Image (cartoon, rainbow, N blue to C red; front, side, top):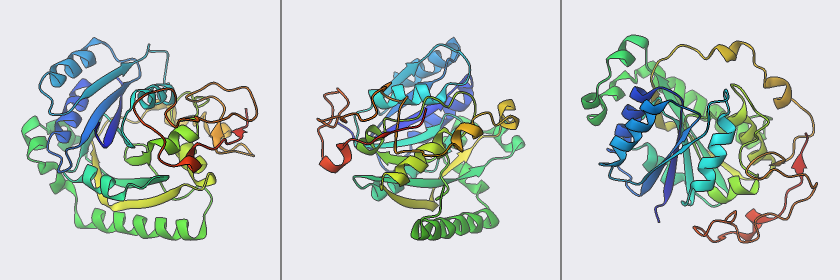
Amino acid sequence: MHAIDVVLSTYNWPRALELSLLSLTVQTHRDFGVIIADDGSAGETREVVERFRSRAPFPVTHVWQEDRGFRKSRILNEAVRRSVADQLVFSDGDCLFGPDTLEQHAQAYQPGGFAMGGYVRLDPEYSSGVMPDHVLAASFQEQMGPERRRQLRRIHWKNRLHVLVRTRRRPKMMGLNFSVDREAILALNGFDENYVGWGQEDSDLRNRLMLAGFTPTCLWHKAWVYHLHHAPNPEKRYRRNLAYYRRKNVRPRCRHGLVNETAELVPLLANGNNGHDSNTSRNGALVDAFRVSGP
């Protein structure tokens, strides 16, 4: 069994996904598998996955759901169910991994912990010209300018301060670059599937991890992904998930996640593996019951 499962979310951008997968072939950390969380892409994405899987130096799993609109939380939960590693690293299929990104996450791993990394936005012209050879040589790292590096360091130190003073809805965590102990995400019942449409599902998970007392580590200053440019998601302007995100009395364990729960108090994963035979519990404290949250 490998140490890390990388979960890549994707939807109908096979070129970007192929480049993202290529960036994983030159990682300094080699003990990982990949799970592609596909929110209803057409057949070309499956062809890219099958072609890549036939020559990949690591195991590749493709989980797919029917296209019924933006249901990222649901497909991420399916990827979590299929995972086997102790540590899960989450990113998007339009991100290129720096060669040591997984190594940085692996070094930060601790049972009951999670870590958040940084990102660099690649401009439209550069993104359109990225070729496989550029990815294999990791030449995209040249787009990390001195000002962006300083900005990432500032975010890192701000995050450390937020962790110290327990600021609400901090530290800053982006869905395109974070990792979490698998038992911790199982304990919280995964991603909240009440988030339908764009936005907030990753921040909600961060909030619940903090509420549950899990330990954050900031990697904004040294674990990076490089985000290929694309037009903004049109749903961003509507922010339809904000009202739910801002609800009161959020509790660590969501009601509609890996398991659709109706009871107020649920005995949680007594064997620590959500019914899978891949892992055994390493930390009994992580599988205590949490009271579920809100609607």
